[in-house]
Length: 247
Image (cartoon, rainbow, N blue to C red; front, top):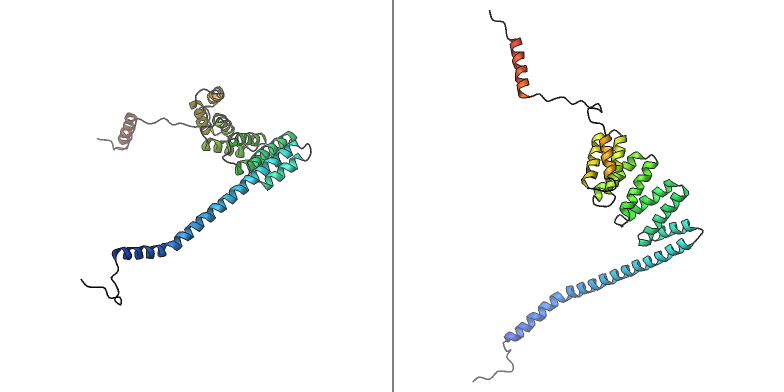
């Protein structure tokens, strides 16, 4: 049995080599992991900060809204300040609707239109959006802005075909199309109203559809199609007329 010489380097065991490999691998990945952890913690902190700031702004906006609604004077100026200071807060949506209502009551419909348009651009997913857009179209039509009203109704139809204002918007758009002598467009819109089944605008749509003039009555010429026998007879006549007489 041989004895180990203290001066000689002993061969490294498999376990020791495994430990060294693990330490080396850890040295390579620990810095990226630490950086990733710090980044995640930092991102979470930023998210929480932004969430807290958003919640704080929403609470402040709600308080400003209640204060403005309770104020008998300077209500409009306070509501406008709320919208300017807390543009994306839910309370701003209510403030814009209230401002539009006050403008209508005062007879300043142009201003009411601006408030409704600001509402639609700022809160397109709000539950009241279809009703606001329909109201906007009706006001535009009343003010003689026929093209704008037609665009509003058609946009409302295209974006949300299942909302409660679909039939009403289609009917109003059909009336405008009729007034602009777009009979084909009016007929199509009225047909879509009737396809929804029974509703408050079903009778109106059917009556308006019945009152629309036919293409012939509207002055649109419809030439009858030439069938095969008529065409053949015509060609035979032309051939006979063009052939020289036989002696």
